[in-house]
Picture 1 (cartoon, rainbow, N blue to C red):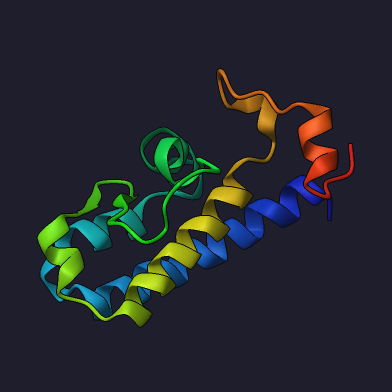
Picture 2: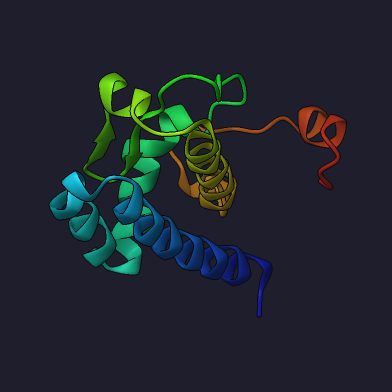
Length: 127
């Protein structure tokens, strides 16, 4: 399996897990979460990159604040965010970080996204 296919496979598995976990955390968002889960694999990746990655993929993202868009068509508002435990907040942020890192491959397919080889090496990535 190529590295790109492996990354996409992990993305799809974790995306589904996140949907399922989010349903338990926010049952009132059932319709939106189920709609996000029902997307095809291609739609999931494209819409995640377009709707979630611009904020979730930001290296300077503050993981202590409400993330807003967490899945395509699924937004957690500030008031909703305050109703869940810090453990649930942390889990959501961890899913976003994991999904964002796997959605960046292949990087050349994301318009406007460029990675400096120096930055990649500084953060332990091979170029």
